Image 1 (cartoon, rainbow, N blue to C red):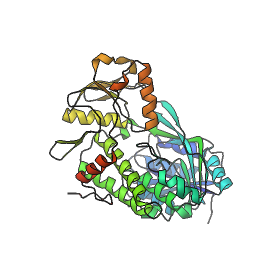
Image 2: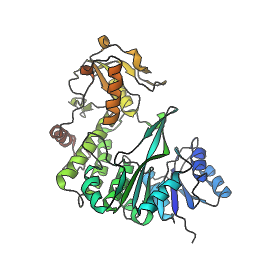
Image 3: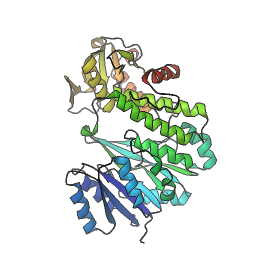
Image 4: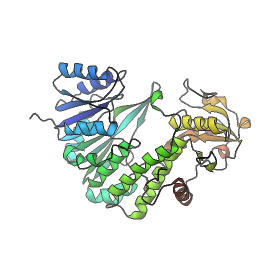
Length: 410
């Protein structure tokens, strides 16, 4: 059996527009000792033919064709067919730097690491942002247990991870990954990356974190869910993820720390998907995370990303506040309901009561707030989020989550 140092696994479903750029970027690596496993997850477009064409041209490419089963099942199929010492994941609508595998491999080998984490680039509407990890360095088993894992999901600032959830800016050992990936339920279709990353981290004995950005993550307009059609099902799926994380981490973290990390993570995921305002089945408002923002307030929403779109979509249905402007520094054409994105300079203090910065990432929130202050926006009008852990616990219980974060689907 031929072996390689790295197996690169690419799950593929309905991405024919982006797939060639992804595959070409992998095949053009400076590092040569790898195999590329393209997993066609029952894609109904031309992706299967594209995959087969690459396999005919390059002996490093192997194709797995399977019935559609979702992202996790595709990653598992890739791992079952992998022969490398290490595993790298690449999403089929993204692409990588020419030195992506070379840097990952050298970081792993030089430090004998079970897991390598690097920076990445975020591409959105043609603009690229560089994202770098904070906790760079080399960590042994004791340091992982003492300082990394207790802050991995929640690092002390709301919605900020100590270790990013993504699987694609990381390098895993194949044998170790096999002890985790097959246990992740295929029914987890929200937060799949987090299920893999944090469970894997719990059994790792060494970690290397580098700031070097190597991966280009493409955030697509057509991949952002604009509204929640079935909140109960969304909560059920989030419950599967959170319960899985608790089951895998409870042996390495104390109960209070673990529960706090998962509560904050679950709360943040609910906020993003609900558009902030959380309603009961009968349409009555049960939770408003926007502190001091009352009904019928005149509101400016900052950010045209997924959270901003969810806020507008939810408000279009329920009309809690009056959105008088939707703005973003990265101005681009986008419309939700009757609102279109406008540049940051299009607002004036006299027009509105509050500005909601639609991000839960503290560093992004701080940077946006600073820019708004420079534009003369009254700091008192910039909204803060409710992060009271007791109120969050009451909310989660009211929604139907038990102490193990399972959701009772009615």
